Length: 315
Ligand SMILES: NC(=O)c1ccc[n+]([C@@H]2O[C@H](COP(=O)([O-])OP(=O)(O)OC[C@H]3O[C@@H](n4cnc5c(N)ncnc54)[C@H](O)[C@@H]3O)[C@@H](O)[C@H]2O)c1
Image (cartoon, helix red, strand yellow):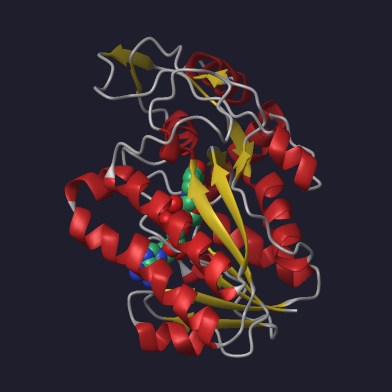
């Protein structure tokens, strides 16, 4: 199949591109490489086409869907903090970019549309685990744009016969996640600091927990959704239904490194959610989902990758 992956140069997108190519598909990546990188992509693969363009540009988006059979829409400004600081700029990408893509899909008769939404649409949910029926309470521009994107996608489903699959990702981790911002995935930051022998800051008591999914499990699901399903009316949580707290993560990372980590606990950040855990029953009913990488296994693989990066940068 010919599949368009927007944001294909990013952390999640580049793993999906690898998997789709491995499975014999042809892939076009639309990415402006604002946070992603060409280095994440096997540019010598002849079934891969890279279109360096912006989803805010309707003409480029139109060009990107030409002869495509399915779209996986991952391009976004994925930083919640960036959306708080620049709601107008992030909205143009995270919502208007989505609508540009939906319009292009409609004009070209493309039905399959897989979208990366987020557990952020639930805000600070009071009851755990979080089912898809939990009241929606987006607390940031990032979350509001993800939810609005879901509503637009549903409009295109009802009005134009789009066959969408909407996934609400919980915390995804793995190789290539960028640790450079303080708001990046906590695992990438902890690992990089542990490997560099730098102090690690924990906001709060470290008992806050998240539902972590290894990126290889997620991209299997994205592949399945783009290649085999006929769409779904309802969004699906992507989590393992299991919370891991930050102290547990630090213990495991300390074990991998064989060193005592230098951890400093400071005041919790206002607005930080204490626990997050997905109910993934709907996902397991509708898709073939099996977590092949429990958190410890995914963490080990991720640690080895960051360690390799460090060695490369020293070479
Ligand atoms: N990582 C997580 O835990 C997580 C959780 C929930 C949802 N998501 C969503 O998953 C998707 C992928 O996230 P990620 O973690 O791989 O982040 P990422 O920043 O690595 O990937 C986003 C990609 O989109 C590209 N991009 C950004 N703005 C663009 C624009 N205007 N035009 C074209 N390309 C643009 C970036 O260059 C990057 O390659 C995002 O939609 C994100 O909101 C991620």
